[in-house]
Image (tube, rainbow, N blue to C red; front, side):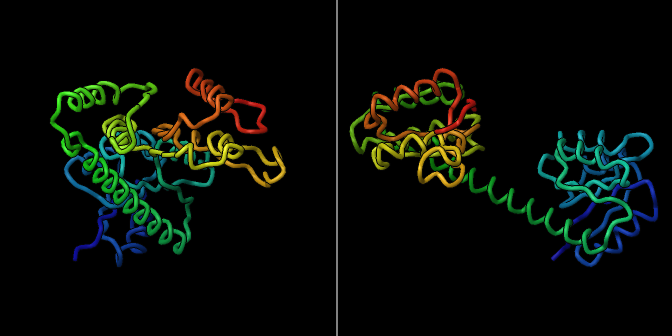
Amino acid sequence: MSKPVVLIVDDETGVRESVRMVLKDTYDPVLVDTGEAAVAWLADNRASLMFLDILMPGMDGLEALEKIRERDPALPVVMLTATKTVKTAVTAMKLGAFDYLTKPFDVDELRLVAQRATENASLQQEVRQLRAEVGKRYNFDNIIGESPAIKDVFKTVAAVAPLKTTVLITGESGTGKELVAKAIHFNSPRAGKPMVTLNCAAIPENLLESELFGHERGSFTDAHERKIGQFELADGGTIFLDEIGEMSPALQAKLLRVLEQGEVLRVGGGRPI
């Protein structure tokens, strides 16, 4: 079985060789000395991990990272930096780097960061594959129905899925309302983010507000710590409120603020989120 490839990019020969020696038993190292060479190599080849120096002549590490991220957002990149450029390394992490190491680096730390980076990348790949499989289950082709009415539902789902809008799904019990909700989510730009489902009829009225919006520590007797509500957990994705008609009118009024303003207020909180 072939080893995973690690691309090592640094203009200092000694640094490249040091990283290669540490990782050669676990990885298949490829060494280049410029950002331009790294970008060119990745245009025709794939790596499982990359170590990228920040300060290099010509294309520096930050510019190279931006170009690499455009082409391969999933490649784990560990930045190599001198101590005085830690702030720059933090900027690199905001651009999508997995981590950074300061020179001279600790051998054990380098091995650990390499292991964490590849394990994280494998986990992310697994999550993407699972989401894709789940999405296939809720493709329109997998929802059974040939009647004109259900075909109208498919058209409506296709129309609303790409939009940032609120959807009300009505129908008798067992007609597939949750299936339609999942079809909307998995055919939308939000498909890569969470879909949170909450059955409003299954939660006691006095707990439902906290469940939806969260609460601050000390906001009521049993609030021993802050709780993140379902709306915050679904941020960027979709929240499906099942049996919403069972919600009290007072709580529906608070829900209206979320729908109209796109803001939630935790129980006991003083500032909208």
